[in-house]
Image (cartoon, rainbow, N blue to C red; front, side, top):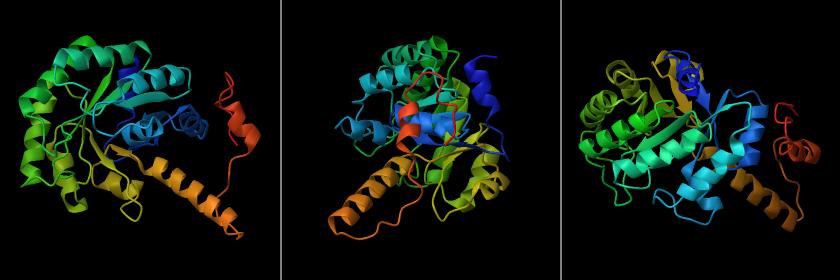
Length: 267
């Protein structure tokens, strides 16, 4: 079974895959060591760690370098390539083929643009079709920012885009910020496994499964939470006060994450 097929089999409507999103080798290896069968990347985390803007098509080199570092993890890897870094379908396909050669199982390809508009559906369809032709072994998760960007009447917009993306060869459909009450309709009519974002305080995995969701991503949440924990601890140390933190991984365990064949060891 190739990586795309193995990844696709993890997308089960009603029994969703939790896809945690990493930003470097340590975070991805730690998640794999916790038993996650697949790990995604977060464009915000990768971009911010490199001192670059998110959603600007500026992290192609960082994505390739990270994919190369993650290729030996005991987990499938999906890479967030934003809009593919280009409006030229051939260039997007070349990028995904480069990632495929490094063993990447999936990519996220989004229609949101830095100017706050959605890419034309025909352009997205051309990108998806080009990727499918150049890298047939990669699972293409097509993302619409219809709700994320607050476009008018996002549900019909999203359903139309789901149809176009499906016909172009997409394997999954990602709709961040879709309201909970619309998830069942989108899941039922998108014609593709539906991916939503995990929200603290929102529906849990079981509840999202009952709504028909097939995949739940953490997006940039883990990266932002890690930064928050670091700031909290630094502020506590500076203020000479007790820090209330969850369990902190041991030094030796973290160090072993970068040792070949050690990433399957659990803390």
